[in-house]
Image (cartoon, rainbow, N blue to C red; front, side, top):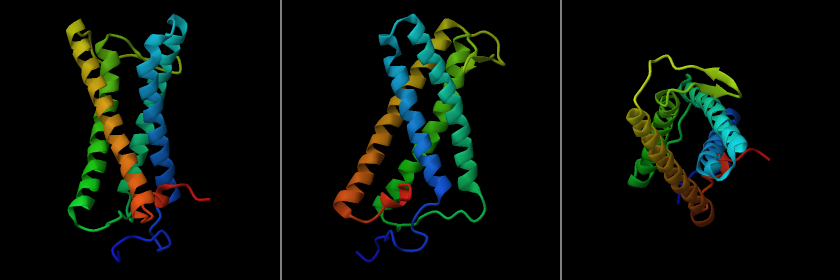
Length: 183
């Protein structure tokens, strides 16, 4: 029990920008996922609007993701080191895997639209492909990989959230509280 981090221990809470970027990332990932999963149930004007929102929020996610990487890499940024046991190494590994998959998903998002020979759209502003035309088979392949990575992220993020709840309600170790906004 002495190895557990107390929420009251100085430095045990993440800083405000880290918390904000975490929750903004989570929100954008979930909204983008839901838009993509449900747009086929809507008629053409709403369907198109949902696709444009998906691309626009995807571009916002790109900016948040890059900012998050820059914020984490800044000098003096400390990482929590809860220990070297297998569980803690697994948690860090899951975080790294989520970062890797999110970066890949962002790149696949650009590639999906451009391999479908369509411009990206940022709230209606077209962003054309810097590449030439692609075959229909290439576009379909990239679309599928984009979908598979999205589902993988959602499943792993769900496990991440479940682990946070276990820390909060079962282990009662303050891990979740240090990622919650103050107040």
